[in-house]
Length: 134
Image (cartoon, rainbow, N blue to C red; front, top):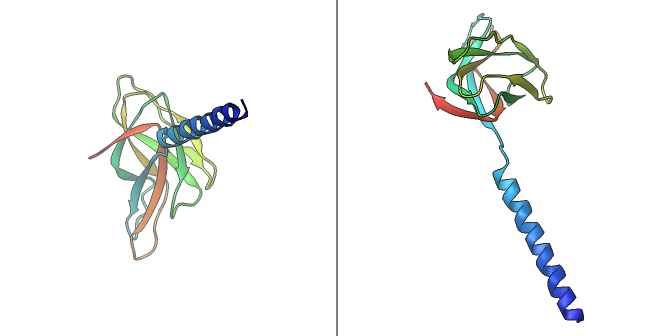
């Protein structure tokens, strides 16, 4: 009787561990979008080459490597319904959620100038999107 309890407890622990691993593997870790800010750039917004399409009506954006606090914006590439997408302020370490039309395609940009003589590469991590390269 005691052996049966040990076997059942062991099986339950193994099942819980397997479920945990499956959920960890299925979790959307996001996509790192690379944005090149050219040397001597004074553009208001600089955009990624990749295009993103929300899987839901919302995306989550986190500042990545090389990016400080700034504004982020969605530039419409293809949408079913025209909407205004206003810039949103992004603070490093604090993800923001932006409403965006599911299935539409956008370019994402950051408000960043570069007065230096060398290009700067920054990254955004974006969750709940499909990605295609222009």
